[in-house]
Amino acid sequence: MTAISNKGEQKGEQKRELTFRVWDTVGKQMSPEFSLFGEFTLIGGVHAWQHESGVPGDSLERLADLIEMQYCDEKYSDGTKVCEGDIYEYAYEYDSDYDGDIPIVKKTSGKGHVKSIYDVWQIKTAKSEGGTVKCIGNIYEHPELLHP
Image (cartoon, rainbow, N blue to C red; front, top):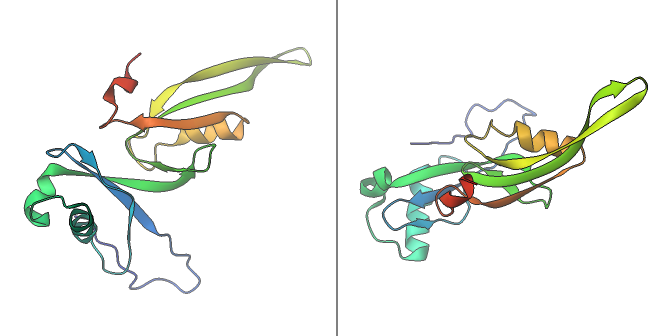
């Protein structure tokens, strides 16, 4: 269970809003993004989503049926936030080597998916090279996008 606390923060330390979504493995539906703050727990966020959307069941009893995914600070080319479980496409050009003084430019493109909030190197690389990265789905609602 994830619990977030604002206690003991250092003076001048910047707070980052933690946002999540959950996949209901039984109901086969994705929650909208929700925030955790103060002592608010993931269970509280799930309970609020269940209440708002009419999803049945007790939050604690249903926890085993839910897969939590955290949003990270990185964004796609269109400005939307990157979240665990996202499937994305990328394309960019880069200088791979030099032939004398002339750079050899290579193009690359492909698909990937975000396994954790720390697994965004391909997204950062594509954007830093002036390329594009866009979310095309997620691994739960669109698993077929993982395979060619």
